[in-house]
Amino acid sequence: MSASDHCSHPATARGACREGGSGQDQEEWQIRLGAWISNQRSRAATLSAERIEQLSAIAMRWT
Image (cartoon, rainbow, N blue to C red; front, top):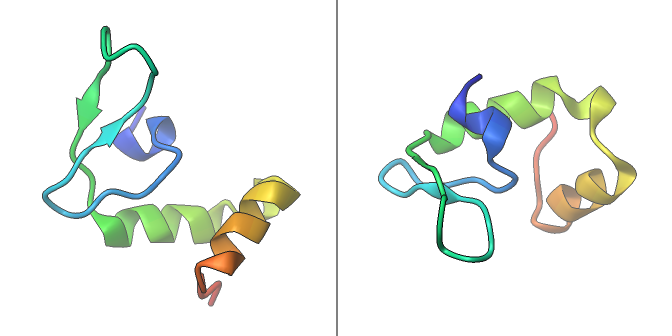
């Protein structure tokens, strides 16, 4: 699986996606913002309504 499959939010090119609440057993992945956006666009048909609303609220361009 790719890093974007694990991240629920975008990271900057030098940032990382960190999932989990305890701070332990977290995996850190470096992803490119452009790749993350492209993945969200290509998966738009399968995203939840809540997710689409969240992305639209931050002015996500879908095309």
